[in-house]
Length: 350
Image 1 (cartoon, helix red, strand yellow):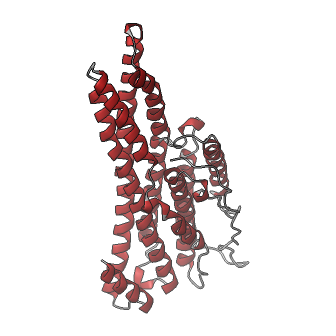
Image 2 (cartoon, one colour; image 1 turned 90 degrees about the horizontal axis):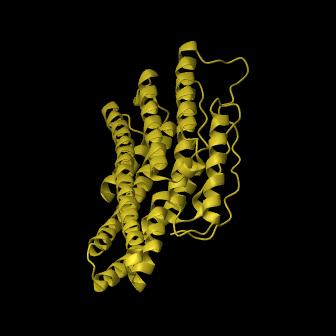
Image 3 (cartoon, helix red, strand yellow; image 1 turned 120 degrees about the vertical axis):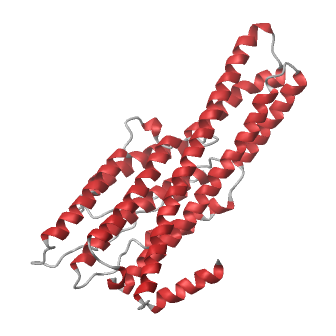
């Protein structure tokens, strides 16, 4: 699953899309809403800075990262409500930004779900191995060895959906250049909040894509304007996480996912027993190896299940937000031509 380390992408240099003309300030209420959103964003980012670097690319840490994305997107929904900015008052460019991003996030979420399902299918092979190890027959041990080989081949196989994440990430990076907002204080607040949500979402998705593809080409280094209150914690988190991820890849391991690596390590301990057999003196060591395999396999399966549920939850949040925007546009009647055309094309595809 892991591949040789590849050169990572150069930094993308963005200008500050939030530069405010001299003398202009946001009204106190809008400033308070923006400050609250950005403070919450900083807190969520801080939670992703692991106390132990070994937590990075564990399924539990990835679950926490995806939960944070879901919370951030819910914060965006709440902000739109608190801004009292109905969709019918949105600039057409804002709508385009929201719809373009949401469809890309739906696509990449489907790719992640597909990979998690594929990895979890390997649990059936591990269960088959453990079942055969309940016998004392050497013939069953050889069959268990064959099943372990099949599991490894399954885990190492490529997933076309994950391979397609790279162009999606490229488009998400391009979308970080937000449209200019003129004569709308509420619009400026919305676009600045959406920028923060997009940066974090794009970055977290790049981590998942790198982990699932076994390639650092998907791992992003995103610079953000230093004037943003969450910029420093994002930069610190990104540096810590990216450094450790690249260290993991540089080792050339079978997989970069912690729980998956633990199962592989257990399988390597079992191989000599299954291939060469063992005497009475090695009986206890064999039992311990089987016990370790059973516990690590169960931990992997549970971790994949938990992460799958969180990814599915994120998908639903993005989908319901997108559907709500389209419904509100239809209710308002004045649907921009670009949106109407896009919606028609999506219905045809469906």
